[in-house]
Amino acid sequence: MKERRGGGKGRGRREKRERRREGRGREEEKGRKERKREEEGERKREKEEKREKRREEEKREERGRIKKLALGGNEKEEEKEEREKRREERERGRRGRRRRGKGRGKGGGQGKGKKRGRERGRRGGRGRREGGKRKEERRER
Image (cartoon, rainbow, N blue to C red):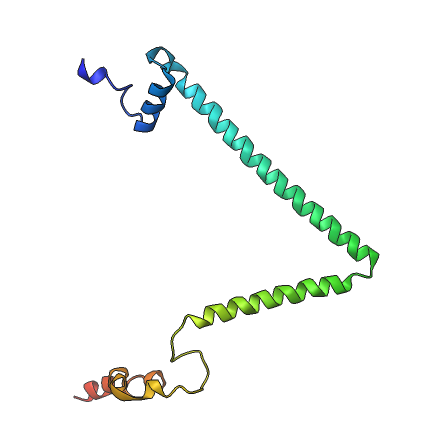
């Protein structure tokens, strides 16, 4: 008898809790699948509506752009947009480069630190330009 408790097997805790909260007993368990199907349908419908909205928005934007072009005197506007896009990309690139440390991809400037001191032995002399001196020495031995 014990295993009949707890609102059935294989339902997540959340569903059991929901059933308890809503006070639905065993008599309404039959409609569970139907309810699930309805909820899924609703979700699909909402998704579709969202997609439709986005499509309409894009269409509206396109129409606006076409209208501007038709008026003619708005090539400046287009150029401005292009410039804006380019600037954003440039800024993004800069942000990307800042994360890398010294060493590569910076161009030569004040980069004396990497050719000095104890790091030097570890990197094997001239670094990536000559593929590490120590490795070659090992090979000769």
